[in-house]
Length: 267
Image 1 (cartoon, helix red, strand yellow):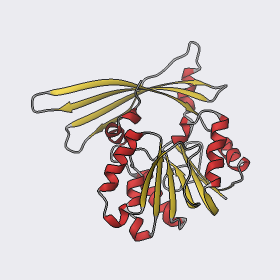
Image 2 (cartoon, helix red, strand yellow):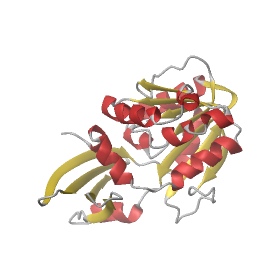
Image 3 (tube, helix red, strand yellow):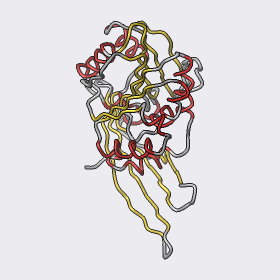
Image 4 (cartoon, helix red, strand yellow):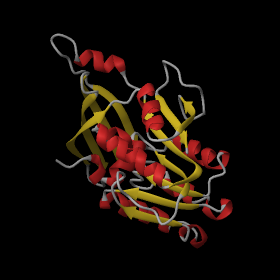
């Protein structure tokens, strides 16, 4: 079954115009004085392109890595819209985040938008962290960006009898009002495996001159649910020092009510 990652235009519509995490990465690059940057799971270029737009002014070199050719195609189209001085400082690579290679070590590797939740097995998680460390310069940083576990949703799925509540969690519309995307979500959680089975149901509406057309499709995922201490152990086990941990995209402190979990490891 096709996932949202095979529909890059709808992936962008799904994320809408929200730029909180984009602004975070713009600020982070300058805060860390990073110049050679790799984004793992760069997808449609939603974060790659805004970073690339700063490349000429801030002397950045940006590499995006993704497994999906459809998503990389969307990213290439966005990069082509940039001035030549920025375009020349960007490369997009099709590859696996467990075993990609870059020509020379870099200052900063980032994994935004809960990409690592798709890495299900411990062996593969260790491979990602180990590869990141091998591709960083001394003093380089590896930044992992995940959602905090939604314990309330997981508790519902472990009730007796089990329940799977349907959430309407996204309702996005294009600026011209011609396209609207509504996403519903159910989650079933296996506590002993830290595995969430997430089912997304999408309704896509398109307004034409004659009428309004609708399409519906399902996108299913298995996701690993990371907890903060677990992330710390992965960093420490693979030779990183944990430099900082944030509970959101304004560099706020992590707390029990945080929705985001952003951890920075340093070589």
